[in-house]
Image 1: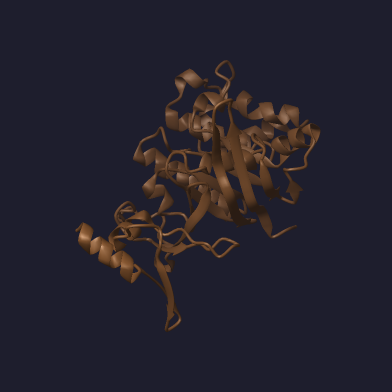
Image 2: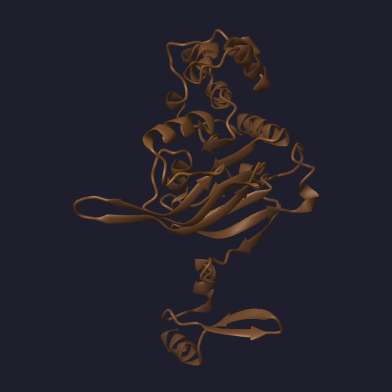
Length: 303
């Protein structure tokens, strides 16, 4: 069994229309190990959902390499891609209408993917998954009788129906209240503790601050990573922590394979750049960026 679940190298995605081209991913590099719980964050249009859709087999790269669980998504046939989406990945959408069939009960919804995979013990496994997400009492309920949080928990059970190697979640707490969001995150965390690899795209600040590894995408590339501070790693269930306000993670800029790094815009603004030129020096083992003397004089004149 490989230690690498996702390996993206130089990933590029271009969306074309008759009049325009949109570069959604610009040479994205990322490695996710088997057994990790990873969150992806970024502004709208940064490329995070495009990346998740590619991993889910719902979109194809324009260039680069994307290997998931040893399978090269760039070279798959349609038949291989169908098997991949059925057996390798499970997807939890923000929009519950994409997760659940309204005319089926919760139990029947969970059993549906198992029919496609010819699972023999469908009912027993579906009941086990319902218990896993804390909704055994809702097995005969339909979509219209369940709350948004309950629907999302059923969606997680559906995504787990075929025992996927990788669980993907696109804004899984985007349409629920804070208490329900915490409960849903606890389900993902418990699944991960049992060995499930989980990748979440989220805007939820409190949720992202509880994740051990957070990857930030900006302008179609990985810009930084945040790693949970050790003192918070065993305190995820504590209710007295304000996860939105506390500084729970260390943030690191990411060098791409060409040695490039994205500098946060607020830092560049504070430097007072008047053009795109910066001076780079190595001082006592530290890389120091500064405004060139000519640029500093221009900034003074402009001020």
